[in-house]
Image (cartoon, rainbow over all chains, first blue to last red; front, side, top):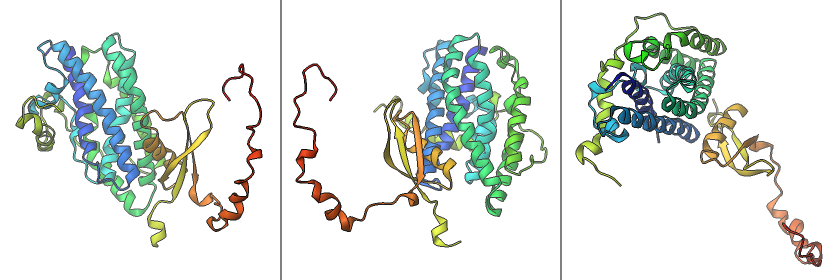
Length: 244
Length: 97
């Protein structure tokens, strides 16, 4: 795959893996209404993944479509950031992950919507509206849990403490990212400002700085991603080409 | 915490289908406060483009008529057909009635 196709793949993989993770909540969320909220966000993300992976397949030009890329690639070939593959944990963990990611994704897609690469811009323009709602939802929950009971606060702190080490990777640039023409490092100050504003309202502080963990973009994933894929890809692995 | 506080209170949800129409009752959601109720209403009742505007209000704020008084309240209207404006001839040129 050339650089531009890989850029589409990275965008698609982020959405796909987070969508699959959120889908795991279906039927298990703390309340029926929250179950629907999470499933809605998951479906938005899987819709984005379909578009971006479809574009990646077209740009690659080897006849792979979005399904082939989602269901017939091995873990080392996935290019999602490590944050999105983190396990759901409890509801606060899930919201901590969503909070850090959606605020980044919203800024990234907003920049992409103005890109000269028209195919990317069209997908981003549609997706950014969805993600604006995801950020709002996650921000509200971080505030609610952080500024809530002793237990909700402790869980929110623990969730952020775990997820925080994967935040730096969101802003890492390499030669492949450069092909898309969006400098992710430039998005950092705006992201910091958003995160700090929400944390202040949630009466929380930033987690202590930890050594950032990166490598997802080049296929260095945690064991958990393999488990996620084994479930997500089971049907196409067991019955190749199955449709219904 | 008592049992009554463990569950989020109930909110009634009203959706405006499109500009110009009035908000219609569509159902209810559980939520801790009004802000959460709007989010839950959005996710529960407008996922398939059903609306352009939402209202929520605490179900506890609704005063309902007493079912035991239904006979006294509603049955007297049954034999008063003259209250329906059906005894007029509508000119052909008038539409949308």
